Length: 138
Figure 1 (cartoon, rainbow, N blue to C red):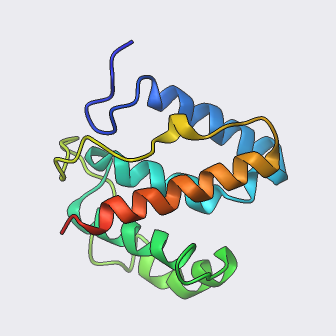
Figure 2: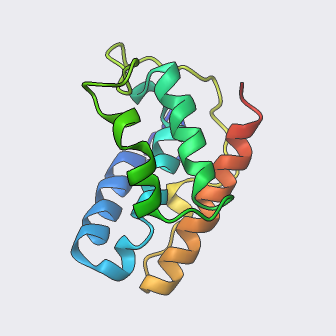
Figure 3: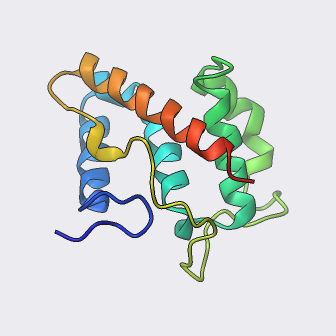
């Protein structure tokens, strides 16, 4: 199996889809959805514009570092992320990585799905690790 050129993990996109399905079908697993998506997107910068990547990094920081709940963040960023009001694009059209990092301390493959409790702990740990790795990228 070929390693992803952006995160280094093999079959990461399939794993991401698998985890999203789990999160949407079980609220215990879905409790960390606000961490899963930004962590994955930061490790796959080809999906985002530079502004989108930087915003995603700041968004991820607000959850585990500043302990802001998802409902608060949604309300706080409502107008900012509204596609009709924001001044930048999130999604990249070119599909080219905007960062050159390919070695991450943890990837989506480090997330176990044995139980919701284990899953949430692993996603939280992965998100913190991604944030730590992403902080050194300017």
